[in-house]
Length: 393
Ligand SMILES: Cc1cc2nc3c(=O)[nH]c(=O)nc-3n(C[C@H](O)[C@H](O)[C@H](O)COP(=O)(O)O)c2cc1C
Image (cartoon, rainbow, N blue to C red):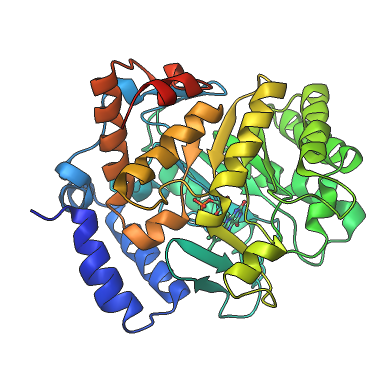
């Protein structure tokens, strides 16, 4: 019998989305609308969940439980920022798709349209180019949605928000802008992420220096403490060096220093890449935007390994998770992130190509592999490259 993900790949993706060149953003918005409708009805969540989830059920084995920066999660697979940008579908993403936790956003303080469409492009197998540019309903509206829905979420279904700044915010007002977004969105979130690593807002990555990040995080923390709340704050890293004269290792060294000085909960890596060679390889050298999926897999692993060697702070690893040459290699794309030192993983692009059953499919596969290999919990995999060498998939 066909796996549910194969039905999506063969019929919906190849037979419809690719064949009729459905605009990726329209396809995405249709999915968000559908999930938004489903999530308001427990009966629909149950029925559609059964239809969508691989094996018709949640991957809820105790082996998959994890704890990240004090948050308990049912499984270590996060949906990173960019999918539920406006906070419209997170309950369904947790309960129908089976994600362990969800990062909403990126959300800047004020609404803005983002770049001109088209701005998402599928580049063949498991690679996407996007230049969305923080299209957002703005912090107030996104927060209203979060507050309206989050009451039904359990403690082990955390949601966070990725914070950004508006396109027209003057560079030296970045701390104030991030703090404003945090003030509005902090209460309803279990964690917050500072996203200065998107390549699609001019000069944003220039904030990834010691001076700027210190100022931003300090102001965000002050804003939260004025409200009497404390939230784990993650920093999202870029896979690219900040400029021609530096390396990604320098970016990491700087941000570890910042993190240890001002108290950051952990790191997420990586965001999309604007690496010229990669863009040339995929025929989009002249196009604005960052690549995600397959081309990030190796660089992200390298960076996670380096980060893990230099800090004990939690790491959420993403970039090419779920991509690979075959299904075994795709499971490997998850395992290798843990082996490199990630405490949890994020996956976005692979879902575009393998469909809504894919997260639960991978989680069931991961769980079975752990059972077969006698691995009792995710913690045993973290930073343990020995496990991968010793054992076969
Ligand atoms: C269409 C699209 C939009 C994205 N938007 C955001 C965003 O708003 N904020 C952010 O931090 N990352 C964003 N990302 C990056 C993802 O969160 C993730 O870091 C990156 O895609 C690597 O993971 P993947 O290879 O599994 O896709 C976006 C990615 C895609 C494909």
